[in-house]
Length: 436
Ligand code: HSE
Image (cartoon, rainbow, N blue to C red; front, side, top):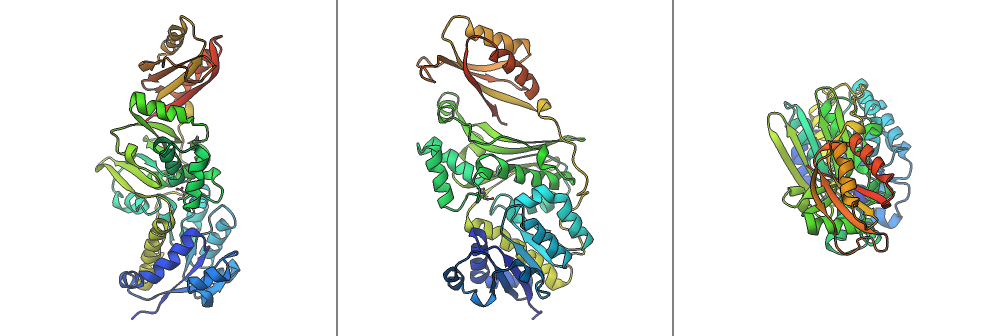
């Protein structure tokens, strides 16, 4: 038998606990793949209670200070599971500098410091694996990075945040209010420690930036991801588009690749009921990857939760440990490309979409004609119109819902500005995009 591969874990939260449990319960299957014993040499957490540590059976390897893991020369693989930007980024860079390979589920640092992290990995010839960062238990990183390696990727689209999908599912099916649904998602361990990362779309932006960086072989900057969350959504629009137009509302991350630029955006979108995404519920995620040779591939599975994320992290540990045991780890980088080069991003005004618009207007003759006239003048074609007879927004006037054909965001913005100046407008116009 080969000497053991030693791993150190920093972070014993939801995911870290699942990883420790899985390393214990699935030891045989993991070691058979690694071809050597896998030793949990150290586990570090600032706030785990002695009872939690004892329950996991790790008291003998438990430490409070991350530095102890980072300077331990026996540890070959650092598993970073604390999340957030700092001190996670510093720990990862220090570990690479100290000659350790890294497994992380931290989408925030990968999205923000992609160039830095992979430059360090290249310089120190170490591996950084990160399956747990996107799609929870879905092996999307491996599918994109390795399974589709010979393709030009043309588009990636996905429901990439379990918390918001859980909230939207409960709002549209369970009749639950936004806050009650979010509380349930938090209690189930799906949400980020700061749930605004989930509901403001930032977590999805992190994930789509990572996928787009792999696909483009460049660095897709977080600030180039046009990001809108679900907090502005009105439950009445969700119910209405479902009932009258047959759409389900989901928070999507989308990356589209042209030969010279990448379009990256995160926003709620109306999905036709017959599209597979419409049936992705609760904490489940789904992602489609379009390659020029293979066409489109769809992956589906649990996108959040302790054991789903643990599954992804342990698969990384297994594959890195296997290379460590074989003496090949770091000979080749895991992700190839020019990590320092920022991708050229398409500006929001030039992005194309179909739209759902809800106008709140004075109930008088000629209003619908005026709105459609302004849209028409801007070359925006209408594909559906509806005006409910009862007041949608009580006391404020009539509601007019319009679906449009594809147009540029910039053109739509100008048309809505023109419309906002009209005397019949009674409230802010609601705009949602329609996909695909
Ligand atoms: N907060 C994340 C989610 C966890 O809800 O999807 C998984 O990355």
